[in-house]
Length: 581
Image 1 (tube, rainbow, N blue to C red):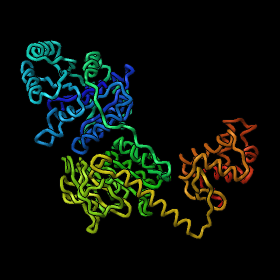
Image 2: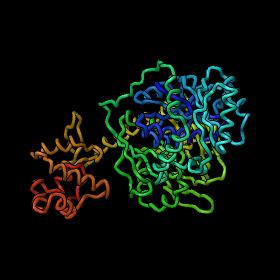
Image 3: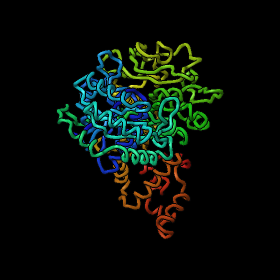
Image 4: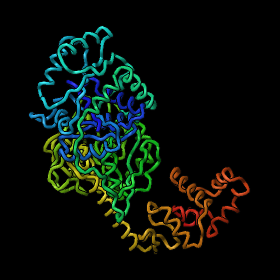
C-alpha cells in the first residue's frame, strides 16, 4: 500500500501547497489519490478533496485511539493507489511532552515514509544539521526525502543539493522556487475555503502543474511504494440498518457554512439520515426536513447576505420554535444568535438564541477542548463517557447572554462560550463553539439521528391522534400515513415505491409519461416551494412533448382522478393545491 506523510520542520513551511500540488499532479496522471489531514482542520481537507476528487479524512491522535486511526485510514485508502497524509505544524510538534500525538507518532503508527518540506529561505550549509537532527531525534521515523521550498534561484538550489548530498543520506525529491502563483489566499482563520472561490479548480490545476514540474514524481512514487505491507483492523463500512425509519436532515452547504467532517456525514447516513443540502444565502426557506445541522464557516464574512435573506431566517426561527431538532457548531451557532457585529457593522441573524456575537481581532478560543456533560442536552453527544473531546477555533464571543440559559457542557479544557460553559440548549437546539467528531471523542451523529427519529415518531403519533382522519398505505412493508384522499401526511415519506403503491390503489398504471409529469412536479416544488400551476405544466410539456401531447386535455387523460393538479400532486407526494383545501 503506497503511502507518504508530508511534514515539515515547522508550520508555514509550505507543506499544504506541496501536498495540494502532489494530489492534483498524481490525480492528473490517472492515479487514485486518497488524502488525509493530521489533526483538527476543515479548510486544508476541502482543498485536498478538490485536488484528488476524493473525500479527505482527518487522523487525530488526540481525539482518536490508535485503532480508530488505523481503521479510518484502512477503510478510506483501500480503493486508492496512493495515500498522502498532510501533517500539521512540525514533524515532532504536538501537545504531549513524549510526542504521543505528534506527526511523528502518526508516521510510526501507520509506518509512513516521511517527506520533509523545508522552507530554505536564507539557508545553505545549515540545512544539513537540521536534517541530521531530525533523523537522529527518533530513529524509528524514516525520513525518506526532502522537498526544498521557497528557493531563491538555481544557484541557491545547487548549493543546497551539494550540502545535502555531502552530509546526509537523504534524497532531494523536489526544489520549488518562490512563486506567488503557488499561494492560496488567507484570512483570519487560515486559508480561504475553496468553495468560496469560483476559480478554485483552475487554481488547483495550476498548482499541480507547477509542483509536477519541480518535484520528481517517479522517485516520490518509489518512496511511497517502499512502505512495507501493514496489517490493519477490519475496514468494512458500517451499513445502514434497513429497518430504521429514514429521517431527513437539512445540512447548510454554501459559502457561509462548509465545515463538515466527511466521516460525520457518513455516520449520519449510516444511522438512517438522508442528507438534504440547503443554501442559507439563496434558498427562501428550509426544505421539508426532520432535523437541521449547521456546521462552522464564516457567517461574519457573509453576514450582510445572511441578514438580507429574511425569509430563510424566519423559516429557521419558526422551525426552531416548532421544536425542530437542530445541531449547530461555531459559525452555525453564531447564525442562530440575534446578531453579529464585526468592525463597525452589525447584522441581524436568526434570533433563536438569546445572545449577540462580537468579533475580535485575535482568537478567543483555539485548540482542543474537553467538555463534561451536564445532562441538559436534548440528546447525548457522548460515547459512554462523562467527558467528550473536540476542538474550537473562534474569533468571536457571545454578549448580552440571557441569564437563564442552559448549557450542555462544563468546560474542563478550552474556552467555549464563557470559559466555563459551552453548548447552549434552547428547546431542541444544541449549539456550541466546540466542534465534535463522531467516533473521535464523541458519538454525536448517531445520538442526533436517534433523537430526530424519536421526535418524528412523536410528531407522527400526535398527528395520528388528532381530529384529522388519516389512513395508511403499505410501502416496502411499512405503513405510510396519508389523509383520506391519499395525500401524504409527511412529504419526506415520498418515494417512487409510494407513487406506485398509490397508483395501484387508484387503478392507474404508471407509464414513462406519468413519471415525467411526477418528476416535473417534484422538481418544480423543490425549486419554488409551491405546486406548479396547470398553465405552467402545459407550457413545459408543450415544449417537451409538442402541442399535440402537451396540452390540458392529454394531461387530464393521464391523470383521470382529479387531473394533474390533484392526482399528479398526490402521486408526487406533494400537498393539496390551494383550491382543494
